[in-house]
Structures are given as structure tokens and as C-alpha cells.
Amino acid sequence: MGTGPRCDNWPVPCRGDKLKDRGKTFFYDFSYDSTDRGSPTFASQEQVFHDLGADVLKAAFEGYNACVFAYGQTGSGKSYTMMGHADDKGLIPRICEGLFSEISLRSTSDAVSFHTEVSYLEIYNERVHDLLGKRPASSEGAGLRVREHPRDGPYVESLSKHLVHNHSDLESLIIHGNINRTTASTLMNNFSSRSHAIFTINFTQAWLDEELPRETLSKIHLVDLAGSERANATCTTGACLKEGANINKSLVTLGSVISALADLSLGQSTKKKQTFIPYRDSVLTWLLKDSLGGNSMTTMIATVSPADVNYAETLNTLRYASRAKNIVNTPTVYEDGNVKVIRDLQAEVTRLLGLLEEANQVSCGGPSVKVEKALHHNEKKVLALTKEWSSKFDETPSIVQEETVALRKEGSGVVLDCQLPHLLAIDKDLLGTGLILYYLNEGRTLIGSDKASCSQGIVLHGPGILCEHCVLENRAGSVTLIPQDGALCSVNGSVVTHPCQLIQGAIVQLGRGTILRFNQPTEAAQLREKQQSGLLSAFSLSLTDTAKSTENLSKVMLQNPGRMEEKLTQQEVERQQVQESLNRRNQDIKRLSKENSGASHQPKAAEKMGAEMEETGKR
Image 1: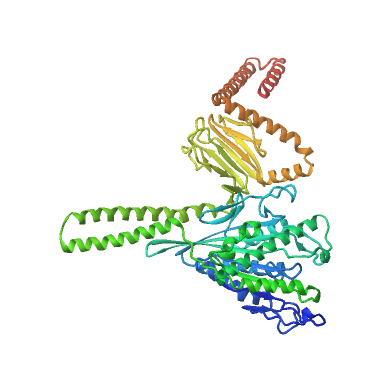
Image 2: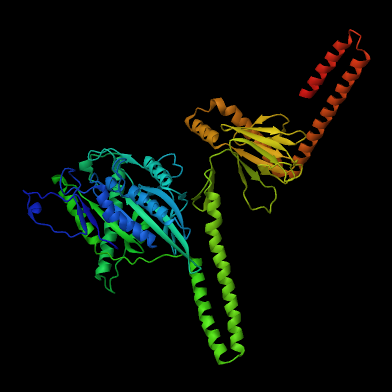
């Protein structure tokens, strides 16, 4: 490994037993005493971070992969060392804080761009669960599948990755993941971790070096292992006993992997008997394959208990840590494949320039023409690839850095989150491949065409869109659609002419071709919670009506898109006919009033016709 293991809480020497009377000597890079805060040798969390965490950050900024994991029996201080408490933070929060502190220092100039994504998983009963994603109905549910990429190594399929821009975002994700982690109370530990947790930071740096792109990708694994335990000591039964068995099984495999890797590093394997590394015997060792014996600078922290009763467990932990110190990893800087191609092309351009100069000095012959053609071809390739690479870091952040919109990767998909009420465009064009999202800020959002006299918040180009078509008014999350005079607007298949409040999932059609779906994230979250808790009785009717109208609208659009337009056109014609009828009645009332202003029965006739007019308008 890149750096040797560390020992926390050195065991107190005991007498009275022959095994304990024998002296045991181990050598490590660091040894810390964290049992008594009043002791002059007490090692604080800050000191541990200064000795160990600083090396992790240094490796990441140099482009190397890094890993830190704590190993030891239950209750020996692994979670305290890795995560700590709110007022006494451990390695993981301090490394995250140090990462963004260094990023802010290096971001004073625009020379370097940084991209940080995080994921958080737990291995519970040999199943992988996403701590930052949607939790399964039960812990026994099917977990995520582990795959192996031929170049990038093992990975978890469908594991969500979250883009973070600052330390506060990262800290909130850690808190959210810790809440979802599986813990239980045992006789030896009131808050015993019942799963292995792996917090991963994918860190990318990009910059231009002499007009050539450079990009390094670093992966930081911060691992909080569950502790080994004995059933008679923890007094566990039932589910906890099963959890402990799976924990011990994975830790035994981890020990076997460490021993096999140590034998390889010491050259003890022979050609007749090749050493087998049992990575796939456990999900834990499979996921940490590169960190344990591959492309990573790995630090092992061995946490031990000073209690006399834990002597045997302490001795086993120290032996494993001593074996791990013999493992030698060969970390390398990982670069993006396109960047490497650009560098190789530039090197080829330099070589061709040298050949061209030599050919021109000797004679003006045919070979120099071929060299010159190859030179121009490679230069064009370098410019094109460099432009494509630069756009990846210039265009995307300008969109994603909007506070209302966030991108996160979930398996093979990309999830676009928007916390504000928004509209999603439903494109009927089969050749359309883009996704358009219109988020609605507080206040009024004007919708119309690009020919409007005043600037429109949302510009649409479909048929039947007026210059000033409608207004969407957002008041504290409640959105109301206000059609303009003569504008064709429909909600869930029904034409609206008066202000209409939109609800979650409503289908809005503007004009004769533009179809939008309305989403209200806050309302959707509340209804989802009520639905899960069985308290959705007050909203069930409205949700059912909305679902039916949306389903009917979708069926009409899928079966015959033209029928939808015909229906809306027919409704528009009927509305115009009603309006013309009202206008004619108004003219008749005015004419009768003038002709028979002196007659007593005329006001009654006018009132009667006015009532008929109102009744017709309602229809």
C-alpha cells in the first residue's frame, strides 16, 4: 500500500495469562492514544487528520486514487475515527472540508476547473444499498448489482452520483446518508454499525497546459467498516446474529485478501503455486479491489480496544495491520482518454514539423508534400478535440450552477432535479431528442411568441400561439394559469377561459400543438408522504380525477394526435359562437332599451334577456 497502517488505542499490557505474558512487537507508521483526553499522549481528531488526511488530499490533487479504511472489532472506535461527532469531526468530514478549502484557494484563477461528484453506499448482509437514493421497502430487499468494467474496475450499477459545488452541499449529503445507514444496539456497543459504508468522491481537475488540455480523475474511497464481533460477547440473536455472521464473513475475506496480497508483495508465490486473491468472495473486497491491491494510495487504520477482555481480538487486528503494511500498490495518474489522444496527436504534429524542416533543408521533393498534408490533418484533429473538450467544462457548469436546477447520475441515467414549480415540454415530433424544462420563479411569467411587443418569460413557436398568450402566476408555490383574450388554453383536455389553478401532474396545452406537463415538487413530496402513510383520503379524489384526465388525454394523443387538435379546434369554434351570441343579445338589449324607454314592461324584458345571456355564458 502507498502508506502503512496506523494503530489507534495501543493495548494496555496485561499479566496473569501465559499468552498475555509473551511480548508482542509491531511496527507502524503512527500510533495514537485516544482513550484518555487528560493524558499527555492523547491524540485528537485534528492530529489524526493532519497525519493521515493531508496525504489523501495531496494524492487527490496530484491525480492519484486514494483510500482510507478503519479496521477493528466492534466498539473499538472505527466510526468515531472516520465520521466522528458533530462537535468532534472525524476523517471523512475533515477531508471533505479540506478538499473544498483547497479548491477555493486554487479557483482564484480560471486556469483550473474542478468537478466533484459523490456517492454513498452500504453493504448490508452482502447486499449493496444506496444511502443517498430511495430506500427499499425493507432492508432485506434486493440490493444493487456489482459489475466490473474492463478499464475502471468494479462499480455498482444504478448507484446515484450527486454533483456538489460546495462543502455545505457535501455535508448535507453525508448527514442524509448517515441517517439511512443501518445501526443497532448490542451488549458491546449502543450504536453498532450493522453494515460496511463506503463514501466515494470522484474528483476531476481540468486545465490547459501550453494550449493543450490536461484532465486528471481521482477517486477517493472513505470506508467505515462494521466491526468483527463474537455472538457470546455481544449477546445478539435473530436478525442481529445474522448481521454479525455476514459482517464476520466479509472481514474474514478481507483478511484473506490482505494476506494473499502481502505474500505477492513479499515474493512468496511460486510458478508452481500461484497465489489466488479471493476478491469476489465478498462484495466488500470486490468493490475495494483497486484500493487493496491496485491503483490507489491506501491507508489502513487499525482501531483496538485497551480492555483486557478484548486481548485476542486486539492481537488479531494488529497482526492483520502488520500484514497489510507489506502490501505494495503501484498508483498511477488516471487521465481522460480524449486528453491522451490530443497529447499524442500534438506529439505527432511536433514530429512531423521536424521532418518537414529536414525535408525543406535537403530538397523540395514529394515526401515533404505528404508530410505537410499529414501535419495539417493532425493539427485540425487537435483543434477539434480541444474545442470539444473545452466545451464540456465551459457550457455545462453555466447551466447546472443555477440554484434551482441540479443534475445527478443514477445508474445509466441522468436525473434533472428542479425544486421550483416547472413545466416539462412534451414533444409530439418523433425526431425531437431534447428535453425542455421551464421553471417558474415567484411572481408572473409571461408566455407568448417572439413577436410580442414586450419580452416574454417563455417563448413558444407552436401553431395557435398568440403574441401574448397567457400568464402563469406563482404565489408561494401555488401556480395559476391566466389565459389572455382569444388565447386557446386547455388543462387536462378541457378548454379554460378564466384563471385556473394548476395541480401536480396537470397536462397543459397552449395553442394547437404545444403540450406541457406541470410539476410542483413540494406538492408532489407532500402527497407522496401522505400516500405512503395512508393519509391521502383528503386528496384521493382530486388525484384520481387528475390521473383519469391525464390518462384519457394521453390515450387520445397516442391513438390519434390529430383528433386532439380537432377536439380543441371544435371547442374553440363553440366558444366563439357563444361569444357571438352574447354580443347579439347585448345589441338587442340596447336597441329595445332605446325604442321602448318609456314603457314599464321593458326593464323586465331586459332583465329577462340579461338572465338568459348569463345562463348562456355559463354554458
